[in-house]
Length: 299
Length: 255
Image (cartoon, rainbow over all chains, first blue to last red; front, side, top):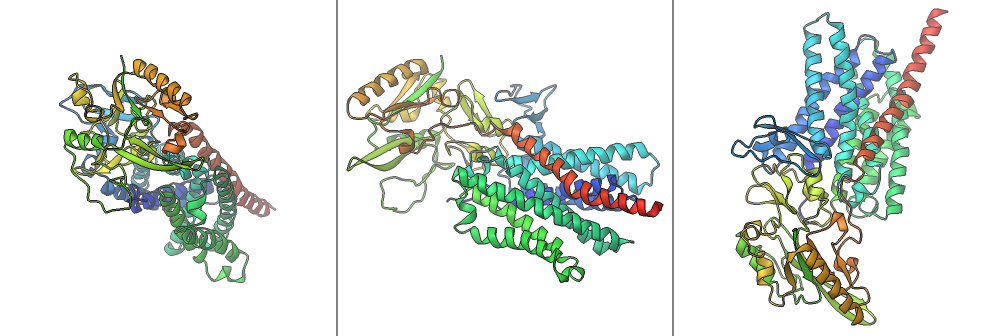
């Protein structure tokens, strides 16, 4: 194994972007299903999500070989060249140099745009909420746009890995489902921590519901994870996860601390006292999951 | 007519003249390496080593065969690097695959996507670098540096159709002379490669994927699998836990 092409900044980004998308996704559904009429959670999710996405993007940009050219994902600045770039599905909409870069087959190109639109929608919502505007329609449209792009953000974090030639990432269709499940659970966990820390009114009743939802999410994630491991075993590429240098992180970090202990806490006598233990462990498990999958794929 | 190179692994004697010629023409620096108990050197392709002869020992019928393969970018027709590149820096130029060094941001996606491990990030600018098929020679009517240097003529440069015919002839000769697994590699793989191999054994024996596939072949399905999961999650934890509890609460409130 040589030096990792994708290292710490990338898996931190996948974790943070996933958490941001997941928090918004969870908060939107909780609001939609009537448990959060004042949009307190949705606002919390937006306040958490936008900085998380921007931090993640910043981490990736700093990690780039050519960080000062990061904008090339969005625009092609080639003032010295009128050459049209095409081929392999790349569509370069060249109205005038600079051109807009949008590459349908590249999950990273799509991901770049998804993160921008999600962040812009989030910032617009924050501005509207702070302005205490009465343009209800604008807020409604923006929250739905945010919801759609939250789903896209969560999915992108998985698809970006699976569209590769690394055995661990491309042998299964379950990387995006696993990352979406983890994004939602880490997002909900972040919301629970934020809610607890901001001392919201009526939080005990809401927290009880969120804890139940988190438990169901952890169970779903466990099921997806088992399917993921089975699929990889059949493909014969599960090795880097379950044995070798990463296996301790996988079994202890992802499975035990991230899933089994939070699940056990829910059914134990401790659950009333250790309110933040489960969410904190779920957050940690999500980070370790991204780390072992990103590093394991390159071994 | 599309150009290509035909690499005859039977003729290759692993002198690594191609490596030296590549470094010399492309002005690539040397690598600092240590003795690993093999003549193979350097240990892997990198941003400053664009081609390299791989040494493999394969046992067959009680005898050890020493297999040599020149490894470099295959200049695929269905190129994974071109498919995944977010900026359009990895692109086709005619039949060749190039990475525009002025456009590349060094994200490394092509490195992860390449089925042949032929692209690497690094010096001098942190961008993705690989074999250019000596485009600066080929467009001026010269053969690539590696083909020019090859003493036994194991690397032939020319018209792709003619090279395929030559390669098939060579495979027939090899099969008739003690190499039953001999095959031509690259004629149809990934829509046709522009580095063709006459292999004396199976592709796997040379460290090549038997059936290389484009990295983005399932990308639509991968997106859909994520969306379906989001739908399931919307239904399971949230609809089940939140919605039902709200309904229970409101029905209690209405009593």
